[in-house]
Length: 594
Image (cartoon, rainbow, N blue to C red; front, top):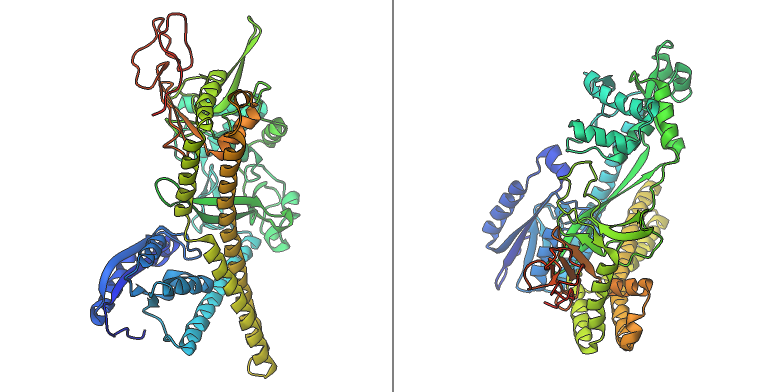
């Protein structure tokens, strides 16, 4: 790496990153990286402003808490250089290197790694760019070899010991197939017996397990309907004849099987997993959450691997599958529009979305509508969630709308709140979407220029066909990354524009309505207003409610024991519902702004 000796202050940020896979595979530690960087800055005379670490973060994206911190520090000015041990610590995609380099240059900062080969000259940048592309190519080839190796192993009739074996099985000594675990397979057999032979529902089965204290495979406390459903559908437990298995595997695998025995089928390459880290802006700053999307691959791509017979009668398994094939979730909406469902009303105790529940009284022939926490008795145990209250839907919806309509009837207060909301959203974004989109457009333009350059070199005979193919393939990968990030930047811009449109709609349409017109809005129209305000309603176990949103400083209400916030005690008749009043109650039951 070239020296940065020169005049003026030399302030550096040290950056270290390691992914979970790297930690497990090679012990590529953060401490080792930071130690190497400290030794370098001591030799070069840098002053360290901050040491930033990204633990368990992938280099396939720039969406990382530590990288956010680095970019914020650089944007604040006074940073000469950001240092990392290796170039791939910043990012594993050359396009991201380009983005960071251009972004930091705007603030007079350079991005450097201890394994840089070039300098600031065009030739040096070209050298580092070529090395980045070669490293990316080698990683792609390694991943492809690994994938092919797994496929070949599965085609040879061997399971891959990369995950926990299915419940009821354990790995053999070679860890290339299963053995039946006698203790846990009895639990699985009981599922099939209860659902298939005895006619129990999946819900009754899991509740029985929960009451008896049978530990689920995940090691938690409760059995889930999803696990029981997936177990019933899993071919690993269903006995298959030799003829059935032979039709699914290669002749070499079939030749090793005993024609007198039955086998289960473990499917490899069945699902596709796509994981990404998503950044979210909010009142507490920029946070991240992991999104995993699971999709089934075409059945033609599945690879069957024979495993030992589970010993569960096939007729139980077929009967259980037949009993659940037409299962549908029963509707509890009571044939009405629920204004606060779908994530507007939340349980303050566990954070779950409150669900709609309709209860029909045969004696009075009336239907009562409530919001309740779905975890209240989800597992058949009373301590699943402490919020056991049923909240009358009509009362809750009327109270929330009274609060919101009061805000709409004060246009100036609404306008100030909406402007603050938009500024908060803009502050939560990673830079200006327009500027980021422009940077990725420039990257796409440079990709086109490099492609034309490679083609000219090939035409002059200075590149072989194989070298040209590899170079163009790398450029296409960079193009795909740039197009993906460009779409994301445009998406963030569109989200901000949507907020501005919602602001205009609220100010121009709803805020100008007459009070009587506001009060006559339908449930669907009210729900649209809540969406524009990003409204959330938290309901506690004691029935108290808090209304919040991005406009949290303007929308806030608490109910306590049937009275507005700040009032004490129950009503004279002992009613504690937050939306119930009676003839003897002195509480108004009306919302109060904090």
